Length: 346
Image (tube, rainbow, N blue to C red; front, side, top):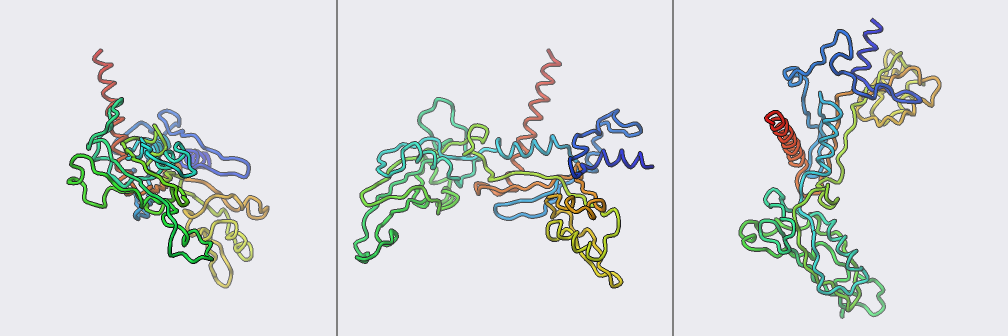
């Protein structure tokens, strides 16, 4: 029985010890364990696989993906980071820039500004095309000149009072429609995601006058095209108390974990510790520093239960980004199957 439990733990749990981590590699492949049928079975996969949305708002999404291997989970993460397309500034035509920010630095800053435009409505620009069209390019104009405020108090030293337009923000970027874009996109839909991103600071007499061309691209080519601020996953924590923990030890145990993980209850006049919500734990392994408590707790993670966190830059809602990542992965699978068919035909 003990041997069977050890094998089951090896197959389903990643165990965190005081000086290392055990069972980090996937081992449930066909023929590895006697008595286990680990051959691929679609019905079994569909039965065990599930996606649970835990939190969703305008810019962030947390969901659980259960019943998959680490390779698939990591594929989703990498696709979200590098292969879901967005629109970003690619070319900057500088007509006048007398600010202290060099043209190259200014162009780089502009490229990193997230643009609120649905990339699914645009095409990739053909390589070598110098002039964009309405189907592959968005155009923005930035024209700001700093002047003195004639109504400022004489003894004032506040730049916000002394100068007009001394801070250049993304709100100063004006969309210039190309072709029939004005008919296709209502006013206000094509814009920077945030209107309060500081681009540069000016002083009286200084001016920025430039034109920006935005194109469709992916994060694999440049990080400015990445649609997520962060996309990560972690395995679901699994915390087990090997023995009852009571009294002051219960209070001490609760302090070894993140708030809300260990709950101290009153049972027949005694304080008793119980695992309330292991999901909240960050696994600092602080409990291993306590000689009395470290032998009373087993720390592990569920091998096939992934907690995904996706934070959008605002270009598209995070749930849409996940759906687009799934489409990209499906496209990769189709191309691979097509290649296999082509090889078999040859």
